[in-house]
Length: 420
Image 1 (tube, helix red, strand yellow):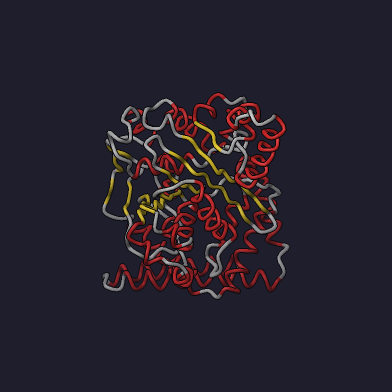
Image 2: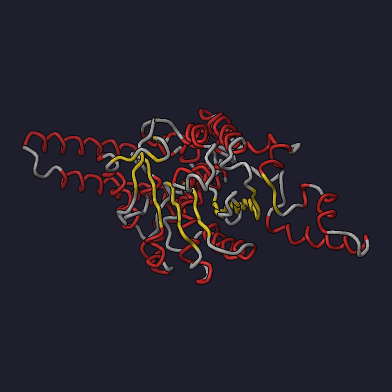
């Protein structure tokens, strides 16, 4: 058994014609979308401007000037598309690995793709990367053209920015977040640049965006989608699903989650998912480089760990029990407290975590009494749900077990009251 990196080493010499595209390939492309292509090509919203400038130069050069000659003179910065070969040879190649969390693994991923027959001739276009603090949006996507002609539209998950994690929390609301709305626009727009069928996918929030865009895009776009790969991405509130064509695409969704999934089971209740074994434990299993692969497929187990599944169900029940006002208060307050660490990304936050936590504790003390009370009341609702669910689950246990459980719950409640 190995990981996606071992899969690349073992099966990289097989072309997609020799060994058809599979879920492991999808996870590779989803993780590929986390690479920072900003220095390699123009983002999609600047490509129109660049194309116009190139056409102006072509006209100025005379009727004999050819478009390909203009592209060569324009250089990489004004290319609407770029190949793995060009990325590898780019002067700012090292900027690909701006996410320090996965620098080593992401480097191995790109070099594994570049050095393989399976992915070497891949090229990308329509890269978008936007972070907007005002609208609390972190959005990135790229359209990937594989050597066999297949097209994969990949949505990036949460990056290292604090605002990216805030947008994850916002998924608990009934209204779509800015990144979700942008995913629909992106899918509608990028599919106009190529013909034929295609796949959509992503990891973490990227999986959520892949599903959201697919169920809300134009009908003539949705009909071309052959598969939607959701790798441990959050689900949706019932009212959000009801607003889109979820039932129409449900049969094309390929959802995979690790055995200790939290993110992928958030607001997810469909029951249709594949559970993948991981080489690590706990919430660290969200890291796709920890997922186990045997030969050319994931190592699949029966279900999520019982304890983890219990907590996932309690968390979802809690979220759906809160009013939108209560959820907004909790999420906004939590975000403001995190911002008190005076960092804008998780790399700096974790690198100086003692200092960050000290600032957070100070921020909690500065909350308005009513806000502080609302936050604790919200957390109390979560504790009540956990307590109730535990009592129900252990209802048929013997009397000694029930007494032990009830004593544990009472102690939790005492500890909670001390904190609040």
